[in-house]
Image (tube, rainbow, N blue to C red; front, side, top):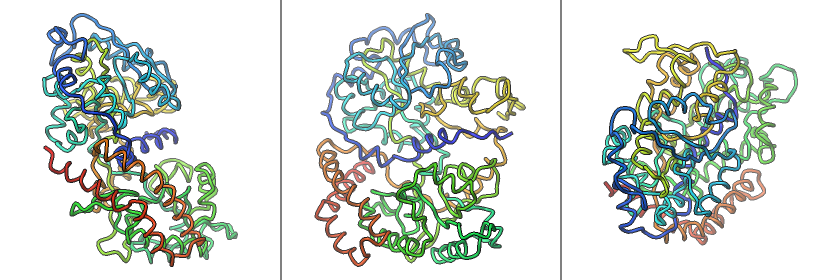
Length: 549
């Protein structure tokens, strides 16, 4: 039975993993290369505590260590339960002989706490779900605060992760810094499709207007929005329908960019490997022209640039909105999960070869697990983390222990069935008391077999919509690349000026404050600010990435 997840959890998860590949690659990546010290630390011990510890660590099977050890772990906390009380972590202690002590901070203040810890010189043994940006990986790796992990991975202490990296060499490239080291591990989800949450149609409007086939072109979409406005799509006798709504365009921009051949909002590489800066592309001009048309005819919500997500949702629940963005449609429309509200079919525009879709890269943009230099047993720590990159560990952390919320109906085929929530209530909320992997992005892998037998009809609907509408036109916009410190310094300086300018001009062009006849002047200003240099730097980084093993 499907249980409605919390809205903020789902939005958090899609933001954390799906979005921000580019943000990760644009993050500052300063620091100097580390040399031999870090290299030796990654080959069986951390700086300052390498030694005989690895001889007591089992490279396979459980427990990981015969004699119990205690390690400290720092992570963000969503406040659902104390980590020391979680059944999953208690089970891990029994399995591994590794006891954890926790240095958690509330999720909304974790970034500040993490920065303070790095500055303090007093580190936890483990950084878990720590959202380690490329800058942090390079800086604290080169300083020796985070130890290199590739020696542990290739030395037999991470067989599950090594198998993933061997089968998906692009992931290894994506997590290897310019000095050749891996300082942080990713969350891996090779089944992921959404880079951002998609657009949806209000199914009741489609039914009222007799629409049996969704628009496939921008012209057909425009015609549909006109009908919504003119034909009382919600049937209340009032002209209160809002054909298309948004929150500052942040929720729809990337999805709509694909209608004009662009895979990402800032930087992307096309199918031929040529790098583009989206805000100066001809496709971007097409996007602005279309959105201005919708605005001028009041087909795009005129509160788009001022409303909150909650205000947008209120309009959906009042059955006023025809097309909208959200993680799932019922988050905006209300009600229970169902097949009523179809995913928007990406649209063909006047640009040849459209539509395209910027597909999820299959891993988190930022690192989610790292080991500090003060960790007394990095080998055991790596084995503890590696358990989550295999089936049994991934299942334990994602679904909780067996016979609590699920049981096997056929273990030979890994088929499961759900159990009633103890005491009733929300399945997802109860799961949040069992496992730390709730509302945060942890290390590990999402495997389809984890959910075998547990999927709802709504899960099947989402999978079908993805396969039909997005997967055939999907492409990863840009790999996780690390810029050199010099490149990153230059890019950061340019984008700090360009990003606000682009955002300001987007709103002006769409609302008509700036006529589209001013496009050439706008494009010239971007070039003056360094847009061509941005492309040059990212082309070089992309070519380096392509040439690396």
